Length: 301
Image (cartoon, rainbow, N blue to C red; front, top):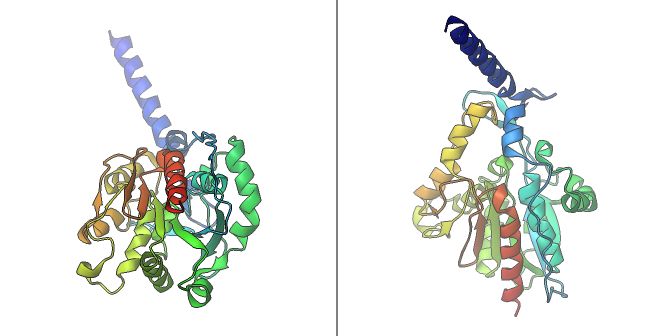
C-alpha cells in the first residue's frame, strides 16, 4: 500500500509539473505573451470545418463588403501583462471565402492604414482554402486602406458597398470601440440600410456607435446577438490562453446599452437581428460566413 501511495503522489506531482509547464503563456519578442502550448492545443486547430459551399446564383455586379480590421497588436491585461492578439484568422478568413464565393469583393481598412494585425498563432496552416485566401490577400493585409480616408471621401448616398464586416479576435477591442471614424461608418451604414457583420469579439467594435454616451439613442439597443461570452474570457487565463484577466468586458458594456447576447458558450451560434448578423466564436465562422453570404444575396433579389 505504501508503494502505491508513493507512486500515486509521484504521478500527481509529475502531472502538476506538466500542467504548469504547458499552461504558461509563451513570451514573444516584443515582451507580450501568446497562448500557452496547452491553450493552443485546446483552442486552435490546423484545419477548419470549411465546407466549400457553392452558391448557385453568385452576385455578378459591383457590390462590395468593407472589412474593418485592427491595426493594434498588444492588449494590456488587468495585471499589466500584454496579450499578443489581433484579428483571429479563422474568424476573419472563413467568412471572407464565403463572401468571395458568393460574388462579393472585399475591401480592407484599418483606422490609419497600418497593417492588419493577425493572430498568426491561430493560423490553420493545413487548411488549403484559408491559406490560399491568406496568400491572395496578404498584400492587402499588409497595405490596407485608411478608414479615415474612407469616411472622408467614400461615404455617399450612392454606394457600391452592401455590408460592413467586423472580424473577431481580441484585437477588435483595441482602438475600434472608441474610434470616431468607425462611429461615423456604423451610423452611415445603418442609415443606408446596409448589413453589418460581426463575429466573436467583433461586436465589441459596435460600442463605437455610442461615443456620445446616450444609451437611449444607441442604434443597437434592443438587439439580440451572438458573441464570445465574457464568462469564457474569465476562464481562459487558467489554461494560459491569456497572461491575465481581461482589462474590461465588452459583453457587459453591450448589455448595459440594451443588447442581449443569446449564447452562453463559445460555440457555433449565429444570429440575425434585422440587418445585424453575428456569430459566437471560431466554431461559428463557417456557418456565419454562409449566413452572411446568403443573406446578402437575398437582399439583392
